[in-house]
Each structure stands twice: as structure tokens, then as C-alpha cells.
Image 1: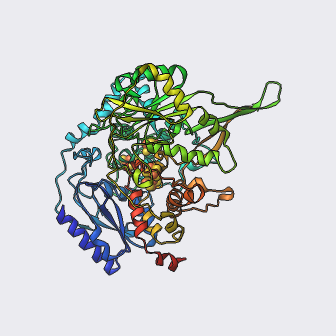
Image 2: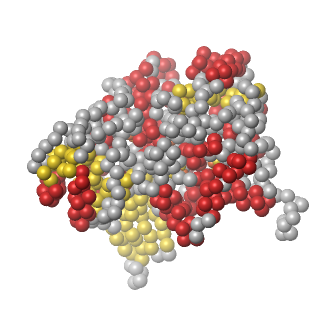
Image 3: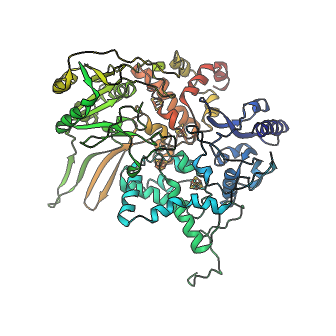
Length: 288
Length: 352
Ligand code: SF4
Ligand code: SF4
Ligand code: SF4
Ligand code: SF4
């Protein structure tokens, strides 16, 4: 880790110095022990502020969208960031040449409260970045996917095992607790609409009241909209201040799309290949 | 007067017969909450007490502040429409329930003083707020411990005493009892109703102070000169402009008014809004004076630490640490205060 931290610092300084990038996005220490926070540096002299340790819980991909306007942006990418970057390129939000990707193999991050593996990292299927300009460190071995799938879909199976009434009650309680802060949307590399349906006030899709109906509507539409594009970075669930199990909703889609259409994982390349949001003249569906 | 902890449920049950009593709880997994791997509740909040509710008075402070009881996330204001005769009507919706918030912390009590300033001073009373406020009694419990994110004593508060609350309970060092002091007329009435459960004695009470300290001195004066300082651009980069900090904050009080119509009837309501949202500052004709995150972040912190103090003589941050704990990107107001204190004012002039 320290070796990777040193390499990031060194390369960030060089890239900024040479003018190859105008900014580097990485992590730095937060106020508390084992806490980090996203860092944005524009000067090589600040490269020493960069930190990389097992508490770098923030996935940085989404920031690139805001920062790319000022020139090429250097950003640290692990598996989750890299897939987010691919996603945004595929969705036409970003061009590959607008970013310089500092690849980082990642053994998984820890929750600062417990010191144990972060939830989202327990289900990570790509610890090495799937796209990068240079790799800072030796590749790590991915956990066998069958093993991960047990964890990845365990909760879906538990929910599918509930009776209809139990399931309704379960999700009603989840949605009732949502405060509609939209952190889950803001942090998501798939939620890149210039204007979210939530904010189309004149159309009025999303009512402003906080109640079960509106909250359920928001959460279900969110998951419909990211449905076939989610890169499973787990940021939505990590960001949710109410600790709501958002990955369960996402994964129900993911699993259904896998079973019905062999959709596979998203964000592995920057080609647009959505299962649902794609038009193909040779689609086997007759009505197409 | 001394209140033994084992008597708490009797008091709550008694009060719940007369009023809606809200207590801090850790909802379980079946209720949208649950316990994280650390053994700590994922999310805690004030909930309506009924016999059987398990209040948790050991939470340092709740994830969600008690402001919802006074200034609900969604408050229906009036119904309107046409009756069967075709005449237009408007029916104001009144809240008439007595409410007791039992077990708030010093930060929460101070936050109500801030909201009182907003809704009940400067020559205008907000009648929806006023109605609820008049029916509200507050019982504060001194903090027997503090969280790493608590910094209220740097913001001029005392975790051991909440002068704005109607009743103050101070935890005894033995951990078994509270010393009870009524601090207002409402408080005296409440304490009088608890008489059967109180003991006429006293105890030594806990004294805590926050581990996290910030320097709040002269913040307002410095910030007044920093509206155009380049620091905001840098500080705001990591912000997601979500509504987390606003909604977990006990003092954030901005709202939006909207309505829903069905056939010939409609309801007008107000609901929490956040200065972090783009739609918050959007005007008719699509003009948005705060189009990007920098001015929004600046607004949030300027309002907390400068504008409010200018208008009402106190900061709008009570140091509860909720946003510090919950911000998904660790944009920490205490670090921001450090950065402001360290900022070089000559830079503001260069830009201005
Ligand atoms: S982050 Fe959580 S509380 Fe906020 S809108 Fe999303 S689901 Fe609701
Ligand atoms: S929905 Fe959640 S897990 Fe999927 S890409 Fe968005 S933030 Fe990541
Ligand atoms: S400061 Fe944090 S909690 Fe507040 S809007 Fe920004 S990202 Fe969200
Ligand atoms: S700004 Fe943060 S620390 Fe201050 S009162 Fe609000 S939530 Fe608490």
C-alpha cells in the first residue's frame, strides 16, 4: 500500500509538472483515524497530500464529469472506478482522451468502524482496473466468482424466499426510511442525466412530499433507470445516510437480466452494450 | 429531584396518555434500520412512544434530529377545491396534538432555539410552526458520553446542560438515575406530573466535554470578507450536492411549498428543501443564480457560520456532528472551519 501511495504521489507530480493533466483526483486523510476523503490537486507540490490505504472507501469515478471541463484529468482507478469510467464513456458522458487513468490493483477496502471488509468490497468481482493508462503495482488475484456470487445474491434469495406480504412490508419499511437526500443518485456513475426526472418540476414526475408512495416511486425509478447499466460499485448503498439496502434492488435486476438475457457484467468495456436500452434490428423479439 | 432509570417507562407511558411522546430509538432491520457489523445501529431517530417501544437513551445523538416533530419533512398546510355546490373552499389544516420530545441532547435543544428565531421573530410568526411550537415540551438529557464527531462545546454549547429545554435530566455518575430540573413553566407542569415516580434526593452528575475542538472565534467577521475567496472552489470540489447534510442537520430549516391536485380538490404542503439541490435556487424562466456546486456549498457554510449569526446573534451550527458523520465524502464542517481560520485574506482581495 505504501508503495502504491508513493507511486501515485510520484506520478501525480510528474503528470501535473509536465502539463499532461491539469488535475489529479485521489484521496487524502480525513480528520479521524482511518478516514480518507477525496482529494483534488492542481499543483505538483501538493502531491504529498495523496494517501492510499485500506480506508479509501470513496469511488472517485463520478467526479471526473465535473472536473473534465478544465482539461485532461488524472484519476486513480481501481476496479470500481475503472468500470464507472467505462460506463460514462459508453454513455457518451466522457471521452477516453479526457482522462488519464492511474490504475491501482485493490485488495479491498475496510469499514473504519469495524476494521472489517467494506460491504461493497465483499462482492467485488474486479479488483484490478479493467482500463488504465498505467498500472501502479502488481495485479491481484480476483476471488473466484462462484464464491462471490454466494454473497452477491444471498440477500436476493432471502427476499425471494419471503411471502408476498412479508416482502411488501420489508420494502415499505425500507422506503419509509428514505429521506430523499438523493446521495444515491449523486454518487452514481450511471446517474448522469443532465436533468434527473426528479428535478423536472414542471413535468412533476416526482412529487415533493416525503411519504411511502413518493419514496417508493423514487427508489424504484432510480433502479429502473440504472437497471441494465449498474457497474456494482456499491457507492449508492455506501453513501446512503440511512443505511438502506440499495444493492438488493440493483441486484434483483442484475440477476434477472443475467438469467433472462445472459447480460453479464457492466462496465468491462466502453462499448455501449446495454441489455435493455439498446436497439438491434436482429433482435429475436418479433415486434422489433 | 431524582429519577431512577427503571421508572422511565412508567413516566413515558403516563405521558403518552396525554400527548404524543417521541423518544430516540434504533429501528431494527424490519423497520428499515438494523445493526451494522460494528454492532452500532445503522440509523437512529425519534419515534412515537407507545408501551412496548424500546427507547435508547444511550445514543449520543440520533442520526435524524428531532426537528421533524416541529418542522415536519412534509407538512400539509391546507386543502382547497370546489365543494359539491361548486363553491370554492380553503380548509387550513391544524395540528392540535400536545407533543413531548423526551431525550433530546443539548445540540437539539439549541437547534430549536435557532428555529424559533427563524419562524417566530423579526416581526413575523409562521403560524404552522407556532402551532406546533406552543404544543411542544422538551426534555433534554445531558450527555453521559460524547461521539468522536461531537463539537458542540466549541460552538458555545454545553453537552451537560440545555438551558432551552423545558426539563433537564442530568445523568448520575452511578448510571442508574437522572437528576431532574424543570427549567420553564411547561417543565414544572411535566415534572409535577412525574411526582409519583420521583425521589426527593440528588446525586452527583456526569460532566463531559467534547474531544473534537474547533476554533469558532471570529468566524463571522472573517467569513464576511471571504465571499469571493478562491477557497470555496477547492472546498466544494468533493461535495456531491446531495441533501444528506441538510436533512440530518437539526437547524436546517429551508422548505419548499408545493401542491397536489386531484380532480376538484387539492392539498398544499411544504416540505424540506436543501440549498445543495439545483432546483432550490431555480427561478421562473430557468435562471439559476447558483448554477454550480461552488455557490451552493458556499451558501450552506456561509449561512451556518456567518449570515445567521449576523441576523440572529448565534451560529446556525450547533456542533452536533451529524453531517460530519454522515457526509458520504467526508466534507467535514470542522475541517472547513480550520481551513477558513487558516485562509489568507489577501487572496480574497486578489479575486474580488
Ligand atoms: S441515499 Fe438513501 S436516504 Fe438518500 S435518497 Fe437514496 S435511498 Fe433515500
Ligand atoms: S446503482 Fe449503485 S452500484 Fe450501481 S453503478 Fe450506481 S452507485 Fe454503483
Ligand atoms: S457536504 Fe456532503 S452531505 Fe452535504 S451535500 Fe455535499 S456531499 Fe452531500
Ligand atoms: S452543520 Fe452539521 S454539525 Fe452543524 S448543526 Fe448541522 S448537522 Fe450538526
